[in-house]
Image 1 (tube, helix red, strand yellow):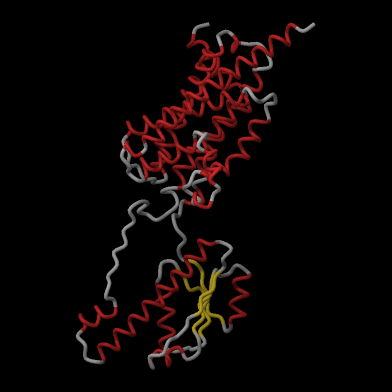
Image 2 (image 1 turned 180 degrees about the vertical axis):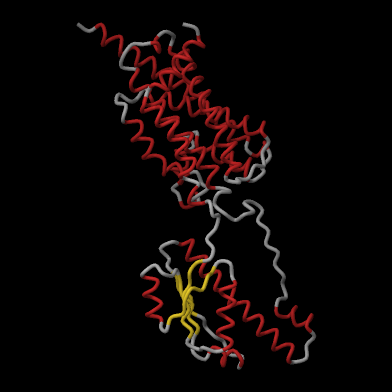
Length: 384
């Protein structure tokens, strides 16, 4: 059998194996929709807020209109008491409440400090953050307007009064992730993790079923077998990668700052290192169901030690050091820096070289593992 014939036979074995085909083809397609779906609306907006207006004055009603005009808040109802508003939050009819105290207008006109009450359902910290930020901005807006009216009443010119109210003009510009949403930095890393985990599962299932018996996978030396198996999976995952990094990135409007050549140059060692790691791990399994269980259990830890959904400073350093042996870690960080943050190639060079080092290291481990399994199978066959 020629090398190309071996690769074609290997690809046919992958397609004909229902468990592997479902994991690879079904998993890649299914997760391309499932994971980005919660983030598709970018940020939390129009969060339902109930108002408890104990002042019922023209100024309190203006405060309510300011809050309702904020994009992060939507005033849905007025309650007669805090207890009534609390009941609406408990029933999930509202996500937060705004309490305007009695004497709100009187105290403001006297120049006295007024305390507005904000509360929200902190079960979802993103929703809670949106409610508090929206109500805080509304409170600052009405406070600034009252200050401006007071200065104008004292005879200060409008331009000078405006400068006194807001002496510093802020121009907030996001350096990265200009949309301030989650698809911009969660989805790209997540897609690479999906490619990483499904590839490991596929190689694990295939290897666990083959190393215990004879077949086409024993026609060549361990080194040649490992290289051919890596080639077949890398060829298959080149199409999956094109689907994720190409069509899905466009479909979900994910930032694309890197050139096509840079992405290809990064994906090559990532796929080779992952395939080599999958080949090495496959020699450790004797049951076809174990690779799926192991890889699913490691998915969330890998996601967190990746450093883009959780600060690395909050993760024990030994775990961070250990995670550097996982090809997904340098792959995800390099992709985020290169494609989403616009880094130069020199800035991701350490991760790129790390991927090549991992590819070489896991290749040697895979050759050793395949040789060990072949010797064990030969011994078992010759036993009386």
